[in-house]
Length: 231
Image 1 (tube, rainbow, N blue to C red):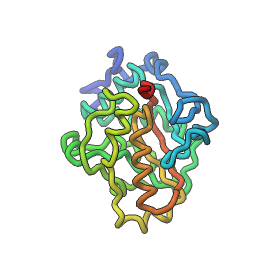
Image 2 (cartoon, one colour; image 1 turned 90 degrees about the vertical axis):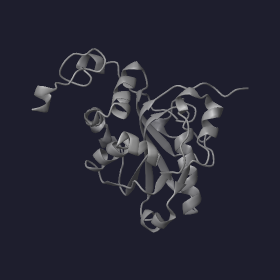
Image 3 (cartoon, rainbow, N blue to C red; image 1 turned 60 degrees about the vertical axis):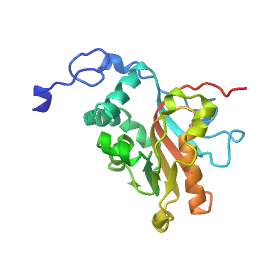
């Protein structure tokens, strides 16, 4: 009934039917398996041994390149409160979940600051995590890692500024550690990854809180390009 009264329109070309019509879906370009640190090719999205740092994730799977088409989708989902776009995004990548081993995994959505969540009414990555968990053998925990302070958007910053912008803005709820210890790996869900500074910062907090190195992985919808470090 809602689709009849308020038909979906392609967010790119306005054609009626889908949030992204079949023609415009061709502009969602899949990413090749690569290391999230250097963006060079790597089997199964593994982080290269030479790229590994103290709090690097073992791998970060990305689905599509971030471009004008994907920007329309994620912007409408995150900033125009179109929850159905989140469901549509999930439908586009649901089949890819079969290639990911979720056994004994805990899914953690990228934390949103409490003020931002109240303003928006939801956390976009939490919605995606819950949709994934309904289809695979994984649990979601939205309280283990939280964002203790707001920071400015990463989009306008260069490589070095992005690392500084996320320093010490996340914290782990240590009361939940006994429940977390039973999982063999933790998977962090994000919508867009560029330098990887944000999820690496979350990995740092998790490693420090647990007092041991755990298997940390990531899943991100879109992979953006970044400006190189200043010399």
